[in-house]
Each structure stands twice: as structure tokens, then as C-alpha cells.
Image (cartoon, rainbow, N blue to C red; front, side):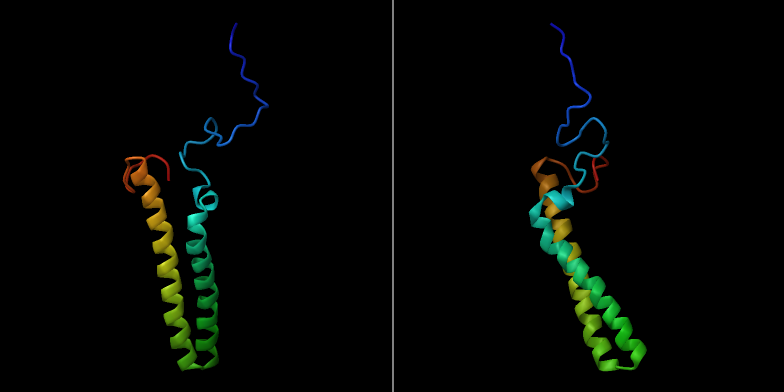
Length: 100
């Protein structure tokens, strides 16, 4: 009996149509969510910083700028640390060309 593969059957993850080994990893892995949230807050804080600076509130612009840097650096750090943890578990490094 031959093995028949139904092309309409959906499999997850779809390894036949993607060249990336971890497509959608940032969304699927819930340990990335705090980092993604911090990056989002950092982008909103960047808008607040620019608004405060444009309106002439130098003190608020400095405070918002510091919070922007903390949120963006912290969020990116969390996402990279989690991505590195997954790569190390597979025996790979962040600079390996496969996947992301």
C-alpha cells in the first residue's frame, strides 16, 4: 500500500511550506510576551517623549526618554534571551544561519 498524503490536510507547524524552523516563534512562545509588551510600551513612550519635547516640557521629555530606553532595551533583551534559550536547547547558536 502506498502512502497517500492529502494536500488539504493541515499540519502544524507547516514545515513543508516554510524555510524557517521557528516561524511564528515569538507569538507561540508565551515567555516572549513580556518582552513584546515592553517593546510596545517603549514605542508608546517614544511618542510621549517626542510630544513632550515638541511641547517644550524638557523635564517630562527627559523622564519619558529614560523610560523609553529602559522599556525598549529590556523588551529586546527579554526576546533575545528567550530566543537564545530555545536555540541553545537545540544545540545551535544565535548566529547559525538556519531558522530566524
